[in-house]
Amino acid sequence: MDKIGIRIMARPEQRCDMVILEAFRQLGVAQVSDCMGRLYGSVGLQPIHGHGLRMAGIALTVKTRPGDNLMIHRAIDLAQPGDVIVVDGSGCTANALVGELMMQQAQKRGVLGFVIDGAVRDAEAFGPAGFACFARGISHRGPFKDGPGEINVPVSVGGLVVQPGDVILGDTDGLTAIPPAYAAEVLRLAEAKEQAEAKGMERIAAGTYEKPWQAPAIARLEKDYK
Image (tube, rainbow, N blue to C red; front, side, top):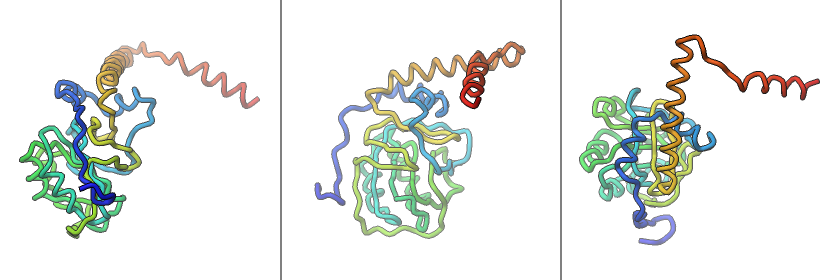
């Protein structure tokens, strides 16, 4: 199937190592984002599952007509363990695109979470199931199943462009995505960032924390506004 609008594309061959994914699951999205120039992240998608759950998986992307989940069902059938199903639903919240039954099907296949730029329903089911779900909103109104839609194509969710096969990370702060070729390097930088922040917290507790960047920044402002 290769007609634009109803494409189901092949899964990218390069797949991030599960050891790297597990290491990312120990880090905060904020720290990872800081190591990518603070440029890459979603806006407006909320953790429907609640707080305290960190997600790190491989993006299986879906682009669908607002309110229609035909291709999401197909994506679940194609999913592999460690995948996160990332859906560009154009931000429409009139009809839910996924709910508890689809969550259970996905979880059975080893899917780690949903990212839905649209609405979901059965919102109370995700947290107790330990299944990550990030979405723009909640609606009890069910979806249509007519198509069209596409699988394994570039999508945009909350302004974050996600390519099929990207590493997709999520926590209470939001979502970010990393091309697999950059994952190991970003992980190294993010682990160093987290260690530096831990030392900073120790200095705060000891009363020895300093901000050497602050005085030069204020001096520049004072010079610019003279």
